[in-house]
Length: 161
Image 1 (tube, helix red, strand yellow):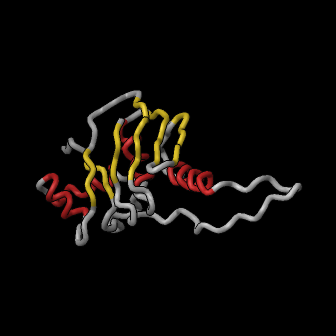
Image 2 (cartoon, one colour; image 1 turned 90 degrees about the vertical axis):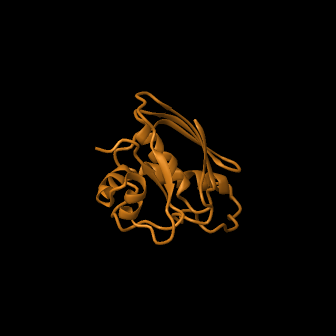
Image 3 (cartoon, helix red, strand yellow; image 1 turned 120 degrees about the vertical axis):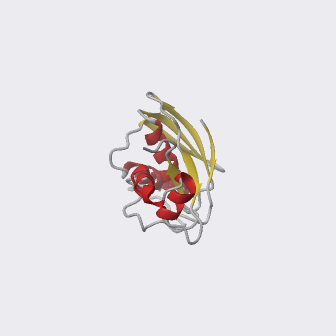
């Protein structure tokens, strides 16, 4: 459990532009609040991560996003934190996720201008050819090894064969 910092102006643009909601009528339900729409967008961002399961997920918006629930592994926990934090407008994620089968935690690396996965692998592991380890550790958030951007946070597994 902890607090993870992210770059607020970097990341996926998932939040809709804020517009005034129409006044509810007797025939319609009350419109969703801005916070409810943001939570729905963040929930969808986590839900689209194939193979990542979180039980009883609950998101709370405030000055940061608090995420509660439980996962089977630290890798799943870390991917959920990164999926939430790598969203434009999110600068911190408070982690309250329980892990049922803990394993060593990965470190997080913030991508800088000019970085490639090979360059990151060389700096982290001493071998640029270990970039597939980083790519695999960040699936399904990364769809291709060349699709990283400055400000994005990546998982760097501690153990490499």
